[in-house]
Amino acid sequence: MQRQTGSELNEIDILDSCVYVDRSNFQANKAINVIREIIKMRSEVWMMIYPEGRRYNPEHLDVIEKSKEFAKSKNVEPYRHHLVPRVRGFQLLMDHLSQYVDAVYDVTVVYADADGRPLDHRRRVPQLTNWLPDQHTFHIHITRIPIHAMPKEPSQLQSWLFNRFRIKDK
Image 1 (cartoon, rainbow, N blue to C red):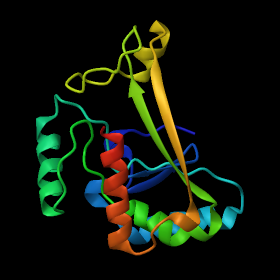
Image 2 (image 1 turned 45 degrees about the horizontal axis):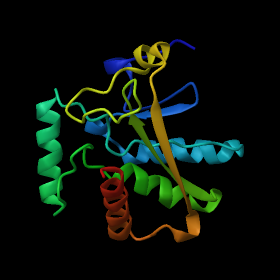
Image 3 (image 1 turned 45 degrees about the vertical axis):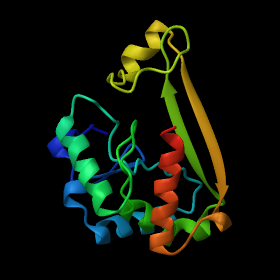
């Protein structure tokens, strides 16, 4: 399969068993159709979602400012190390897939310097291809949340997601 990047991606695209969503042109009905196709496959799948949309990069001041504006609109204190997550895609997954999954896994990755100390949040996170050859360290924290413990109602799910990011931000 030929890889697509950037503007070549449609609003929602399945590529190498991944679903890519263009947040600026998100169309829920297309996402729901993709989810239905996944359900029809009846095979075990892992779904990963990055509700913050991209990695925090201190060089992208416009993105950080938009994140702060979004936080203000939701009465949420902006995070120090993360962008504020958007709940719409996560809510869609929960609405359509929760009966097919056992749990949600909250994964946090912390990049460290050569001595194992977490990187300063004011520095850009390195690309993985540059990171691994130098044998640097990164820490992964995984929390398993049983699906029955997840909130169902949209405003509660949004609060839950904001709280998970508050925990990540510490």
